[in-house]
Each structure stands twice: as structure tokens, then as C-alpha cells.
Length: 497
Image (cartoon, rainbow, N blue to C red):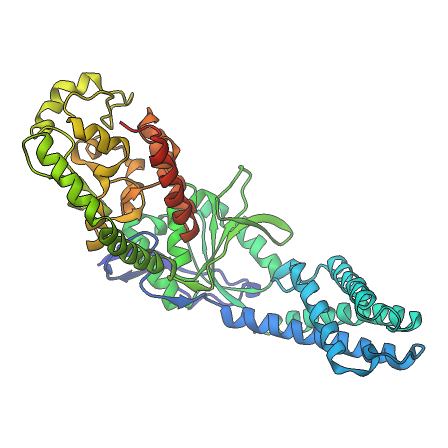
């Protein structure tokens, strides 16, 4: 048990009441840590998805009514022309599909200011009408609509769709004033910024602030209790100041796997996060990192892929394993496999499997070779023409074949196919505090470091930057891209020694 200063939600009403939450202390038991920074306690739908779906459905229905009504009035009051376009219901359906599709592609069903972009709405309706003209020209060039009916349809479509948005916005504001359809949010910002940030949030007039805390609630010791509180209160969005998160960017994964949209509150400094998109609150530009629709699923897809791929590759490569094992035995005395203690997830030690490429007493000989280390900051040990490497070992390293037994590590869950490389104790002992973020995810056989230079990278800091870039930008597609690039890098023997 430990104490975590978080504001109780009992004193907090919707943001228009002006009630300032009272600081209280709440305590929660420490729960089991997640096996990987990117994993979740379970798969769940994105928070607040019901309200978002309701908004989109309502807007689509209003646009369908507007376009259908405009079409019917245009046919009745314009100059009548007998054609399939005026007689068959299928053409009315086509009109709706084109119109709704064009509005959707302009992002006019998105929340906030996007749905209130009337200029873009008029453009979308106009483009859909022009597109219908093109379809008519190629499908039935002699029979379509009269010019008066077409112009009347366009004018009424623009009028009715804009009127529908105005009615929707007016109704939404009226309901929110009464405390309905508000998003429950949590604010994390330092005390000196709280007043400014609360004023910005108040301008948006669509949130209920359930609590507020300073940046310490995101520290490692307090983090689990913080996210447990967010889950208990059903928080949909978290507003976090840039100063509170700039040194904790990896915390973004906790919000994403919890299904909570992260809003980064504006600051005077230049801010950027790889997965962020621009958004406005109270007409002030800021960044947001949206949660996926199905939160917590990506990492388990990754683990299933690792498991299936390792089984398939171990089966396919079994003849190659036997050949390499025979060559190692014929080349030099000693075991076929080399097992070394490496530091993995959460600094937990495990034995990594490799084909032996060095003489049997290689680790003892390393101390005498430290002076020839080619990594400038000395954290890693890399050396071209290492005298400890055997003849067959040079060829195995050239094509990274010595790494193939690590598929067994992937199979048992110590490693992943893609991730930061697990390092020996000797290297991790020289880590500085910022370096340990790479230990918060499963280590991998290959990674962004390996496809960006492999042994040609001369400074450990450069390798760490690549690892952090991978962690911040991680996705299933990025893993697949790295795997394909790895094949090319290995075949070209880039930076291999």
C-alpha cells in the first residue's frame, strides 16, 4: 500500500459550476505490473465509444433526412423530366451513398470543430452533386434531371444539411448545459499551470472534470494507482500538460491500452509526439493521442504472431540447424550452442541462445580486449576482427545465422521477433537512468537499431535513441516493416562483424 495524492471526485461537478476540487489522499494496492509496456490488462473497447457512435449515427441520420428531403422537393417543384433518376428508388439510394460518403471523407463526422466546418460541408455537398452529374453522363447521357431540378436539389441539399448541423449543435449545447452527454475527464498538470489549463478546458464546455493531480501521479511508484483510479471513475479522456509528460513519453502506452484518449495541453514550448495529431480546445491548438477502438489487442496480436512465426521458422530451418551444428563441431572444440545471461524485460535476467561463434573462453578473454573497444562511450563492446571468433563463426556472424536459436527464446516468451536487443550484464551495469526505458518492453531478435546500421553505430546513445523511437512509434505494421528490412540488411551484410 502507498499513498497517492489524487483529487476525489465527490467535490467535483461539471466544469461550469466553478467548484474547485478538494485535495484528498487516496490509497490503492499495487497491482501486478504488466508484462510489457505496450500490453494491457485485457482487451476492451475505447472509453466513451458509445457517445461517439451515437454522435456519428445521429449526424448521418440528419444528413440522410436532409438529402432525401432535398431530392424529393427538387423533383416535385423543378421542371419534371421522365428518367430512371426520378422513378427508381435505387438512384435515390445512390444519391445518399455519394452524399454521405463525400461528407465522411471530409472528416465532417469527427468531434469538435470538425463537424461544425460549414465551409467544408458546403464543398462536400457540392462535390457530391457534381459527382452525380458525372455518373449520369456516363450511365444515361440523354436522360437525367432538368437543370432547374438539379440546381434546386443542390441549393436545398446545402441548406438542409447545414440546418441539420445547426440543430444538432444547438441541441447538444442545451443538453450539456443540463449536465448530459459530457465526457468524464481527468486533468494532470502542475499547480502553477492549473488555472490556465482549466480555463482552456472550460471554453470547450463538454467535459465533467472528475479529478485533478500533479505530474507526480505519473511517476513509476504512483502510476498503477493512478490508472486504477482512472478505470474506476470511467475516465474517457485525460488532459495532461506537456511539462508533466515530456520526460515520460512512454506513459502514453498506459493511456492507449486503457482505452483513454490522451489530450496534451498546450505550452509555449515546441511539442511533438510521433502518434499525436493536432486538435483544438477553446480555439487553442494542442495535440491529442487517440486510443484505438479496440484497446489492448495489438500487443496480443504481436505475441500470437511471434508464437506462430517462431514455430513455423523452427520447423523450416531445422535442416539448417543440423548443418550449422555439424560445421561448428568440425571447426573447433566446444559446445554447439552458446548460452549467455542477458538482461530482459523489467531487468529480469534470462539465458539467450546462440550458435557458438567464439572460442570457449571468449568471455574471460574480453577483459584483455576492452582497450580495443570500438564503441566510443564504452557501454557496448564491439570490435572488428575479434581474435576470439572462430572460422565458421565469421560466416555465421556475417549473415546473422548465429542468432537463429533465439527463436527458442521467442517461443518461451523471453523475447520477441522485434524489439530492443537484450544486452549482457556488463553493458547494463553502465546504463544511465534514461537508458532503462528500453527494458520496459520485450527484447527482440531484430529491431530498429539492427536495420539502421547494426554494428556501424559507434555510440550507444544513438542506439538508445533508435530503441526509444521504436517504442514510441510501435505498431504491428512497424514490426512487419522491420522484419522485411532485416532480411535485406542480412543479405547485404550491412554492418555485420
